[in-house]
Image 1 (cartoon, helix red, strand yellow):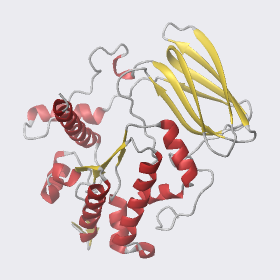
Image 2: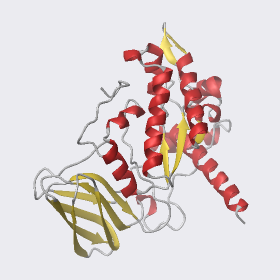
Image 3: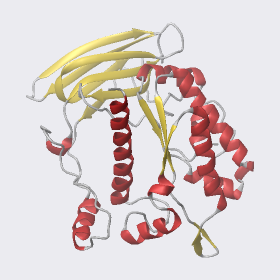
Image 4: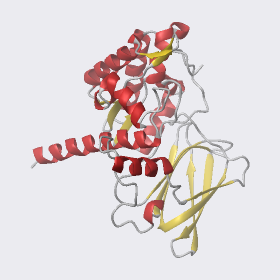
Length: 328
């Protein structure tokens, strides 16, 4: 059903498109800052790039300036839970934490649900490397965010899916409640490649008109829930579809880009054109030869993911600098 254009409401879904429930009343979830796994593909690419200057440079993946724990990430100082009622009208949470020095502590909190809507539960803790959370009442856990207490916090609050429209299967009240509780400043969506293939084959009657309606419905929900949040669409780069034994362009992919840009313009959303950034069809072919895009002419490699992320980040920061200058 998640590839269909007609997604029925799924009652248990939280605002991210997913939700967890404790298996039993005494279940515990453990979160800790783990060692970052070296991305050997990136290191190998960097080594290769030094000998082939025509390849795009991938910035160093080492720790940021002033990082106390290298690439493993800074310690957590805030914990934010977004809960919905489970077995009871009240949910209790016990938070145990282990600090940087190895000492432990405990904090507790509870929320009472007056309706089926969500509630936030927030904790402030000493700088910690591990937290253990247990619950009474088996609530639905729609979100668990851990933050350092400063700087930029990046969280994956949208689950991956075949189509962006499957997020419309989240009951709108739960969708809006979760977004209001999380209160993001910026939401970035990257979809479109799967939609273009479904449109190409007209699966279940999927059409450009249906796709555009889906986008307007979804972004309208977010704007109503959190009118202060910005929305950015990361538009798809070129994608080649294997047809008659050869990788070829297809018209539906261009239609998806056209629709996304029109919706972004009409609704006041930001749009980063991945097609232009990767330099179109020939740019995609070069990216495959260079190791930035995999041999399926669709998915990025690890170095390619860094390349696209750097391009998006740099553009955001450039525009932010222009905005700051304009306010002086």
